[in-house]
Image (tube, rainbow, N blue to C red; front, side, top):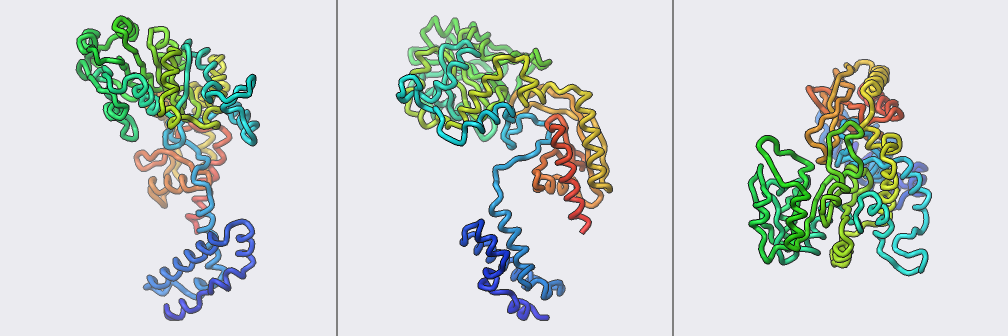
Length: 471
């Protein structure tokens, strides 16, 4: 049968729209979208027929059922949510691509109870008058950090821009050359300072900066001494930098403001969880920092946000700056941050209530048992796969504790019918959206970032891939 004859046999749009299956689609989806999917399916089949050089296309490709199956697949892709649940088997706990921190189930449930209606976002319940939305979390920030006041913006980069714009615009900010960081997304501190209209004065060297370097650089134009915590890198070896308390004493003796950008922003002492020491926000406040900046979605493990705490007079100046409105967070972010902050009132309970701290502190024997269980389920789901359990290394991620490896366990899987990259791709595209790593031509699934409830879901993804591969 010629290509021309096959093309003539394709059903018309009128015929397709009259099909019962299409009528069901129209009950659930807008007509323009259904029409688009049908036209895309028809065009795809036309191109298939025209490109067929081996006579593989036949009358089956011109039947309405075949067209509708193609259109249904297109419609499903068009209507599925792009921002959706995923399974993180990478071993990176704060995975930026997968949304960083996992919210506590306690937090999620409390939010769901309130998200279906109006909320007390920017109103004072006592007076009934409008108030600043960040007042909803300020009392918790005061309690947990010891600061006089606090506010929240949409991320820590915004916090840096806002603070420098409010406190040092058209004046100088002194920063150590070894702290001129660049983090993901081309965020470079010198560029941010220029955008904030403050003149950057970098002092010291890449590896060593002394208190006298700051003292010698202070001029009548200086407004801020900025200290930046190297949360996403480390300079090791012959290094030095002043203690924060020393910088505070120097800044205050000269009538200057000391800003400490902590980055990850620990509210609890990480050593109590067997992790390396990380300066806490309270440490910075007690050392004399006037303003402390940190992320809400790293060591706090809430939604995205940048937290600013410090002296009340300075926080009020920051609140009044025009950029504060541009950088403000919405009700959902504030709800997640407020309810997550509540968990830090009892740090000892964090491993039980907070997914981040549960993943950080899961014992090795628990991880090994989880990996063994997952390996068994994958072997049943994909019998021809090569599956093994191996030691692995996990990381906190998102620039937090960059030098600290977490000993973990993982399942290594390889399929004889496809390369590891293709297997990993199919796992990502599965309905469960399983993300792992590819190492040595194997898919590596680190169980530190999995829950026991997710193990059968991962296995089901392997089973679906195996079923399609057998066809």
